Image (cartoon, rainbow, N blue to C red):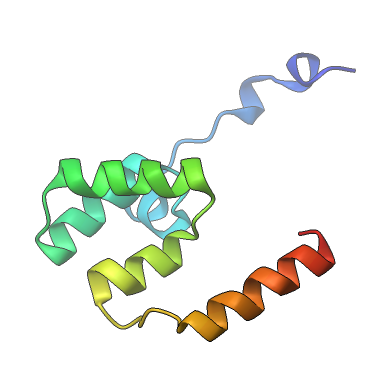
Length: 91
């Protein structure tokens, strides 16, 4: 059975505003909320989220680093250790 055959009217879900924001399933909703909350241009937030998605950067890290400004850059030693760990584990 294909996914299309499994799709019927019970597959449709209508979400309220708070559910959309809480579930964070839609980048457009995340971008809108962050732009309002952090008083940033919507275009900048939208492009930043797209860049994170395209490069595999975690959105939580982006939010902490550029919006909350609570994340500090890793030291060169931390970057080297992480790079070696990724090489060894193949992740």
